[in-house]
Length: 292
Image 1 (cartoon, rainbow, N blue to C red):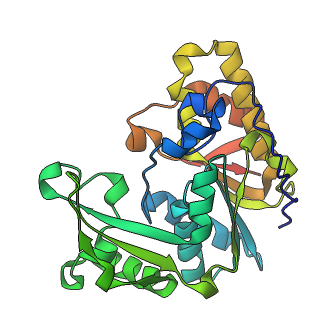
Image 2 (image 1 turned 90 degrees about the vertical axis):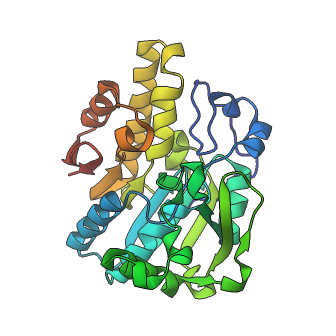
């Protein structure tokens, strides 16, 4: 998959309200400096049902190399989760993550990640952002078969320094450790600055087999819906859908995600209508869409 050269004078002069960055707040588009202070939360193998459906679909395409792209990728948890599962299934992949947040992209390029164990009394143990804590902190004897499989896959890709596990004074986090993607696993992964509304300037059309962009679409359709006139919101969603359709290959899929589960938010019909207008069809509830 060709990546066009990124202009170092990349324009952020986007005229709408709503942020297409995982470090999202609506004002972040108006002031990039604020992106430095925003906190994002994710985990490896989050939304496993969607990831597994995606990998099963990619297997059916029977391509020698598959292209996976994650928009608003933050530090790359989702992209690397897809990479790990795809390679475990015997697939060869090229992976690209893009985000508006410069700090997020720099962090992603380091391939260093933290895995956190929340305190039991915090009440956050079951939150999605901590769903990967078992990879480091759970005794393998107490793991389910699914957890054992995921840990094996994870260990094949990451170096875990168990000596680096330490307790914190944080009111929420009990322990944390740092992990790093192995050098040989970094070769087919790239992280770049990018805006979904201008994706055709850095991703070659009709080349993407799986496109993730669920979290920031939530920020567009929910975070400022009450401030954007309906016709404006529809125009934005149509622009997004056009970029998605243009990027996807034949039978490529767009992963919208399970927003009711992730964010306790029901996606409006405007989102579905925009995707349908571009010829995309839902194939897994309305969480994953295909370009036929």
